[in-house]
Length: 57
Image (cartoon, rainbow, N blue to C red; front, side, top):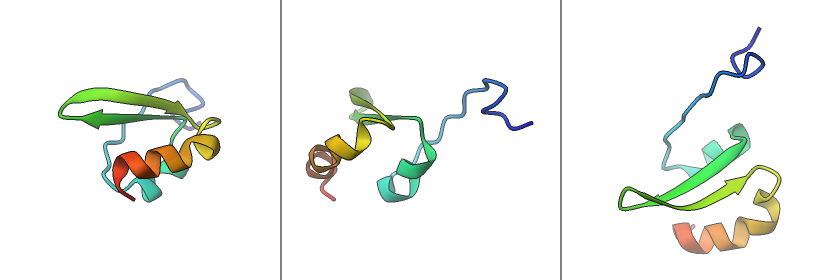
C-alpha cells in the first residue's frame, strides 16, 4: 500500500515548480519563509499564469 493511500502526508520542498507540480495535491508558495499562496491541484490549470508571474517562470 502506498503512503498516500494510507493518508500519510508527504512534504516535498522543491524550487523546480515544473518538476513538483504534477506530483502534488496542494501547492504552497513561500516568500521569505511565509506562505503567500495555496493552490490545489484542481485549481492549478486556471492559476498557472498567475503562478508563472509570481515565480518568474
